[in-house]
Length: 113
Ligand SMILES: [Zn+2]
Image 1 (cartoon, rainbow, N blue to C red):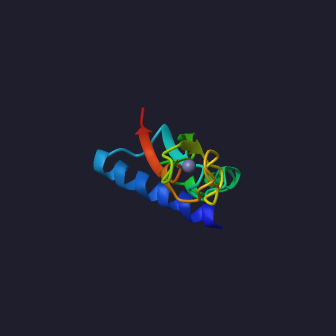
Image 2: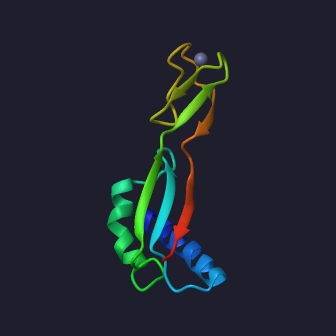
C-alpha cells in the first residue's frame, strides 16, 4: 500500500532526528499533508500503527494538519480552492493555474518529553 511506504518514510525521518538529538522516542509528531498530496488520510491512520511499531514513534501522538489545496488562475489571477488537480477557475473557466498549496507532505514538528 502506498500509504505504508509514506508512513515508513516518516518513521525514517523521525529515526534520523532521534539519532541527531540523542533520544530514544518522541511523544508527538505533527504532520502537514496537502489534500492533493495523494494520501488517503484514513489509509494512513490504518497503516500507522504497524509502521511505528518498535520505532522512536511507537508512543508518539500523531497530529495531522490538513492543508486545503489552493490554486491561482494563470489567466485572470483569481485564487480558488481545488479538490482535484483538473479543477478549473470558477471565474473564467480556465484550466491553466498555479498550485499554491495542497501538495505538501512534511513533518512539521517532533516533540519528546
Ligand atoms: Zn480565471
